[in-house]
Length: 193
Image (cartoon, rainbow, N blue to C red):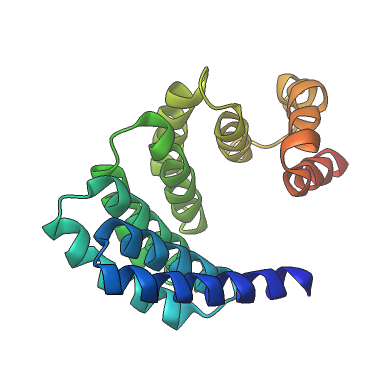
C-alpha cells in the first residue's frame, strides 16, 4: 500500500514541476518530468496513461535529437507492452531501444527483456544469441544483468548443471541478497526445484 502512496505523491509533484517548466519553456526538464510520469503510471498499472505519455514523447525526442532518452522511452514502451501481454509490440520496442541505445550498460536491460520476451514465444535460438551478447557486454561492467542473463540462458538448458548450482549458491544469491532481495527469492526457488 505504501508504494502506491509514494507513486501517487511522485505523480502529483511531477505534475507541479511540469507546469512550472512548461511556463519557463525548459524542454529538457519537461521531458524528464514526462518520462518520470510515464514510469509512475506504469508502476501504478495505469498502462493507458503510461503508453500515451511515452508515445507523445517520441516525436519531440526525435526532433531535438535526444536519442539517449528516446532509447529509454522505447525500452519503457517495450516493458509496458510486455507487462500487458502484447508481445509483438514489446519485441518491436525493445529492438528499437537496442538500435537507439549506444552505451553497453544502457543496452543490457533491453537485451535481457527482449530475450525474455522471445523465451515466452519459445524462440530459443534468438534467446540464446541475445543472452550470449548480453553476457559478453556485462561480464565485467554490470554483475546485476550478467547474473540475470546467465540465469535466463541457463533456463534454456535446465538448472541442474553443477557449475550453475555452485555459482547460484556462492555468487548469485549472495549478490542479489544485497542488491535485489526479490531476485534472491527467485534464485532460492530455482534451488528448491
